[in-house]
Length: 477
Ligand code: NAD
Image (cartoon, rainbow, N blue to C red):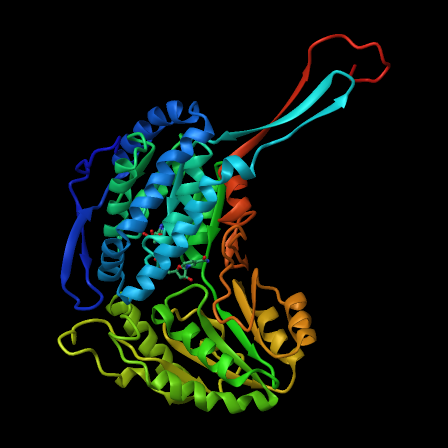
């Protein structure tokens, strides 16, 4: 708060647990509404001078922050891995992706120059980009650094003060981000971190000085936060859960497809909003199920795959697998019996799991599972495969595996998801392309990164100017 670590007035605390071992690795404050008020008021004070700073100067601390994070990426990756259960490589990947948003944000002075036009004799219209004031970001457990970095670089560069409420399951990396932003020369109070749970989120959304909210998390909470914020007339973009379909056409390239599918459903232990969840094999593409199972069965926990976030996550997945089995799915790869790494037996581990012969109405084919579990559905045509994706409540990502440009185009044009991959298992758009889904994967207008992020965190003022009377008969003259 205001550039210094402050004890929460609530006096309450939240424990942080290692997904690898189940052991305690830290404690953070469980803040209350009055703590949120202190932080937001301090942020609002700092924002005035920040907004008055020219944008070409506002990007400087972000440029130094980029250098700092690049230099200390290993340290940050260790912290991310320690609290989220990712492998070090996955943690580094998320940091790299976050840095791309910083690169985009620091190019805002070049990208977003506004514009002016003489619209009538002697009359000029111009655009002026203006910040909103204090804005807040609420983020999920699965990307402790990347998802905050989807938000604050752009929000800060356009002149806002940003208050981050990281997931209470992974609150530690966010502290490093705060310290490094200060070290990079960001004025105190322009970026703050507030720890806590739902109470803090509600206090942030309700606070009269908080003008906009970015949220990333599960669909029920995204929907509720969006409703709460918009009822108060605030801007809110709330990204929710996902149920991503990977369609494999009969003409798919075997090697490319098998590797991409396995990486997609096992990466980050399947705890990724872009992870493969439903594999729809069309006709002869069923030949690829066996090599997918074989490749996934060779992944070792602790080496190739990280841990699940906590014990309830594992229990939820184990019961979802049992339920699918009870409904007639065949467990052709069973991660429940996978070996935990030696010395880490108390961690929350689940190996890659493949459920074959799943029917489209089964809950494992419809509900978000958020773990390394792939449900395989066999269909006879591309249209049948597409119909499954179109019927899904969610709309984050769809991928099509094919060697035919025509098939790829046909599917991409008819998919209802916001992000489509062609022979890409995790079709995350990279900056300057914006990230965002549709349907129950996104509540609110626009996307979170890229040019859409500039729109999210700012207003465009239109200024019309005339300096002298004009002789022509135009209504504006
Ligand atoms: P979550 O919804 O439980 O928590 C997200 C944030 O909301 C956390 O900061 C949490 O403290 C807070 N929160 C939790 N319950 C709340 C409540 N009742 N009221 C107000 N705030 C509350 O999500 P999670 O389990 O941390 O993350 C996993 C989910 O996030 C998955 O559903 C995943 O698909 C989704 N996700 C989506 C995207 C995307 O881009 N669409 C990206 C990453 C994760």
